[in-house]
Length: 162
Image (cartoon, rainbow, N blue to C red; front, side):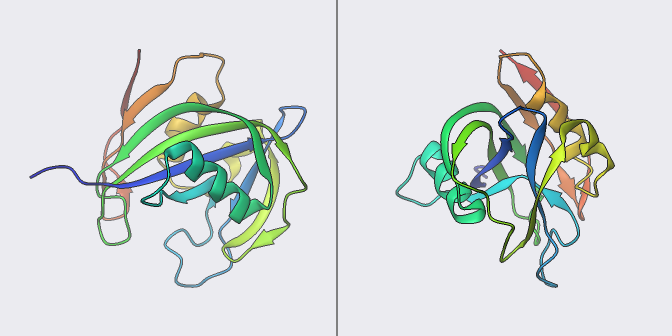
């Protein structure tokens, strides 16, 4: 059977000094699959857009800012991650320059600037703890990983870099 994941973006907006990242605290909707967790910004790609356009649109919708500089940091395949076991494929970006002032909240929750060194202290998906160091490291090569989930739990993690 062919692999037909939901294609999505995931972005991490850096503060102008590069020490903090804008995170979404998913605390607004009781039915949210991510309730209580901190996430980057992003979402599903629309049929008529490429991944870069999708990332820019999602950040504009979720944070009210426009991306001026961003870099693809990697891709992650998440078989079984969805609320009902759907497969996801994510393109992970870092936004190094933006214009505008970020919103304080959106319909999914509060937006908060967090020190990069404190990310590990936040409630988040266990798998995020595995790939986030790769998003912020100094290696310029993108990473490409696979992180299967079963029943809401990460099963394994592996990645490579070209």
